[in-house]
Amino acid sequence: MQPQATASPPPPAWQGPYSIKRHGTTLATCDSEPVHTPGCIQAHGAMLVLRLGDLQILQASDNTLEGLGLPVEELLGQSVARVVGATGLARLQQMLQAQVPGMGPSYAFTLPARNGAAALDASLHTSQDVAVLEFEATGHEQTHPDASLFLQTKSAIARLQGAADVRSFCQRVSTEVRALTGLDRVMVYRFHPDQHGEVIA
Image 1 (tube, one colour):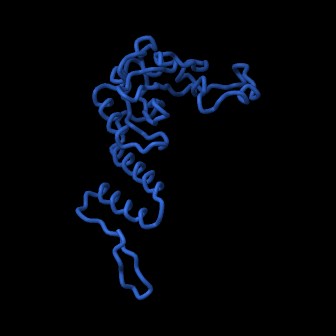
Image 2: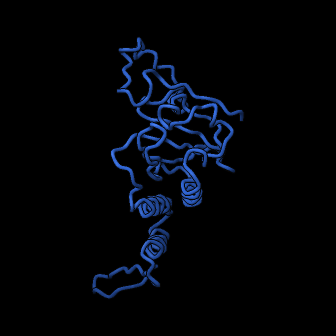
Image 3: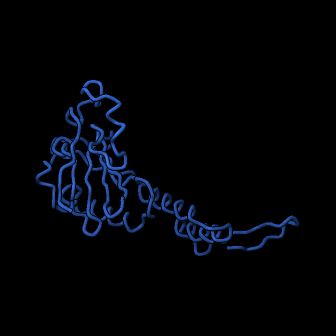
């Protein structure tokens, strides 16, 4: 796959909302657009498409200079660390190892303001053989302290939803609660009508 820029609608990012009325596009134009592979993004965000193996930047929205402080031509073919640094890279790798296939976008971290660009919240999800990293302007400068716990919980819920029956669901519940809490032992009880309990997971 060749690195390439992905068109982004006017006006430049971070300068107000995009209006299909103002830019002469009709709603009928949207009828033929494949919604799973859009040709443009919302004007208040920026996007990078990364190769899963090494997190090299394959595609980028054309507003990265305004949004990320770096022009597209300096990003394509580079490691995403060029944008998010070593700490951000390690966080993305951790998230990709923990993610359940098909899970929606998850908050990754907040990229501090720099190079004239605003502070940005980054979210990550995968689509087939690529990772999609989306950025959106935010009002805070620090990564949310509960970001790791949020990802763990979201991943756990996704795994629970894949349980085939009640017994396997309960087994997964005990495993996930143990991972989230750090407890040595987690058991799931079923209580019978006479109030005696049975360990089922």
